[in-house]
Image 1: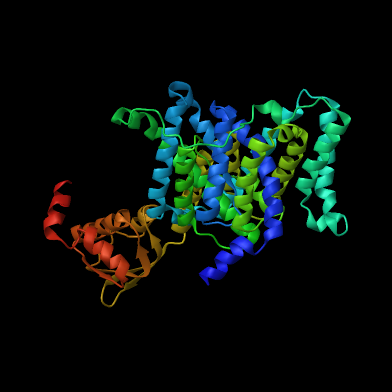
Image 2 (image 1 turned 90 degrees about the vertical axis):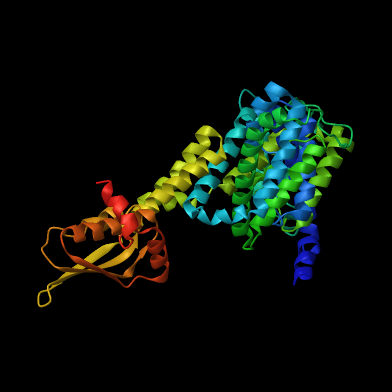
Length: 497
């Protein structure tokens, strides 16, 4: 089974993976340069990082067909470190980022993705689509009409070329777009912005580079906050991207393996003079839309990227930015979940608030972690509020034996504990009270505390209290933290009143 899976990942889609890898490599170049400029480092730092990360995750990653490289989300976190301490400290931070991500992988933090709701993922996807589109706007402002014409032509090629008989199914339209517009620009001799205008491309292969900084505790205190932020944001974006690619390809991924792979990739990047990176939603979608499915597509993207910028840099520098803008606009359109707009009328208000809040926070802050944090927090609060409404109580009085019974249904936890206490009538003059919990479940210490208070108040009124029907999990937490049946602890509680 493992052998079959490995074989399928590498040679199950050779033509599609190679062609998709070519498209991704071409689209990676300007982004890697742009992200390097954002971080305040030389373009080769981002390009070398993209090569190393893509190649390493191709072999070690937990999600076949996903593209990892230098990213804008990570670059934004490096700005202050590079400005205050320089490139060498950035390389140390990149190495430490990798180590932290490997540790997180072994702690199985990838499993925490199960706590992120579908509405948060949808908001994350929509925000990224908006950010990808917004990132193209500088290339479309204060430019000549030629740029608009080329961009529109590129979009036309991308969306119409697949309808061309035979060849439209063989060649990915984004690759045809890039090659066609580059040839047209060179033929007409148009004076427009190209990849070469973004920064000087490297002309040498990356070499082993140990950071030239003192390995002291002071160095650790400088880089650790940055590394922790990089590790967290990197894994968050990588795991969210893996979830999206899982949906696009209808296949599973190993999130904990991906955590470790991202760590090893960042260590490799740091040792080759590159910056930290993570999975890229835009490039991953390009890869999938262009026919890439296996690990071969990721490997080809990394290898072709390096080959082109080192050996074909004169040709790569001539690619018009308008062609790549057209590709990225296609990505933003394809990434945005258009159904989420139609579903605003159909879905509950709480779900819509979570999705829209995630979008707004990510777009305004340009920080994916903030958006996901806000989405998860709001989702948790809405869920807790919803579950608390499902708790209710049935009460009846056995007049013959003078026994008041309270039968509870539902979940009792911090948000429903006050409601639980409010169900009791402590002033009712009955000698015997039965609290039936056979259809209820106690989740936390707050719930146990509310039960203690109920029993104590009834006993103060002179009533005998019996608790029946506890399930094993509730009984365990009540035995451990409850005080109503522990005289020595009860004394301390009552002594405080």
